[in-house]
Image 1: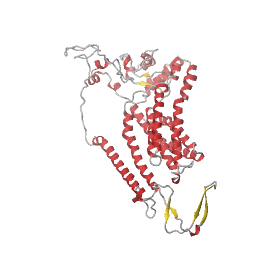
Image 2: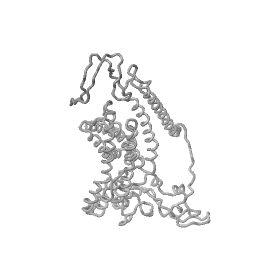
Image 3: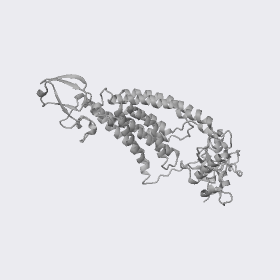
Image 4: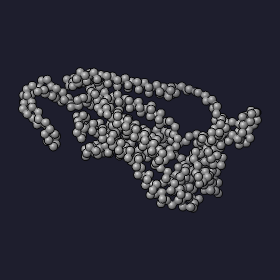
Length: 510
């Protein structure tokens, strides 16, 4: 999957380079279009991987999208732009390209997000023409959104501003304004157009704070040091031993290709002469880190005294930032590294809260219930028996049907009837033990199906021991098992066609 994403990044970089050769606005527009479309490709590739939880899936998706958008938005433009075009004010200059990227991000992506053309088409064209209520409800769910994609949509703007902060300080102001617009456009999407997103916890936000912002700060320090070292970006060094007698006279300075005269230059014996010298320290074959005056090629020094002072500050600051971030990473990994050599046991104490107290919260605490998502149903199909689960444990309610309608075990019992296979062996079992009363006497024993002995409460640790199937309470992979997928496929087909055939379930029975 990672190789596929890497190949796609290289191909898109070549396309962007071609778009820049066509026109100044084609390149930034192509960058914005690929930034919008690549997440869908990344989701397809990420689904080829195996993830044990939705949080891991989102983290992997975040890495793929973030890396692409950082490279596509900032790094590729630096690579394809000639070094001597960094400070020029023409259409091929880097400064103009950076401005066009910010402008395209502001106009293109924000307009697409607010207009929501796909969502309007589904709600106003497909939904009224649906043949069933479920079909219409599916078209009204809203646009699917991934939390990882929304995080990278903001982080790419910050990374772009940090990458070019030295040569284009206005990028920091444009970044703040663009984030302001993104905040309100995303809030509009969250309230109006996006599909409901399940709670995923703080895994992506913690990962972003720990790795992205530190990486962005490192890029700000290192790239800024090389940017200050590259001034004046003309690859010319003044020569002291070259005579200008052969070039005395008036010369017309013309542009390459068109031959347009832009300046007349008079040369005499007192005019200084220049020779080529590489000022891009990133491309020097000799020692080029840190980007300080000491690492200039011998005999090809181009920095002024003031520039040498500035590069010394930026260069050694970059070294300090890298060292500090590296130490922070190593320190955060010490526990994981130490666990490879010795086992650290930390006993878990029973929680002070009881299920009775949680039930008094109005059912705000929901349980993990294994489900199978289907494109033919408005709600997920339940991959467990619903007889012993109360409605508030699901986290969702269908106003037209009971939860039993989405119970796959009911379909499985019908399909395997007469074959001699028990559905209980194929599905996880989940049982809810309600706390119906409190008894002040700790010695009083609990009744069957009710709370245990004591004060009528049941701790989380004891709940796991009493649950018939502990595996049903533990997080599972994002993708359902093959057997459940077959049941879901059969359920979808039966709901559409209105009939069923036991022979189609033979593979599940086997």
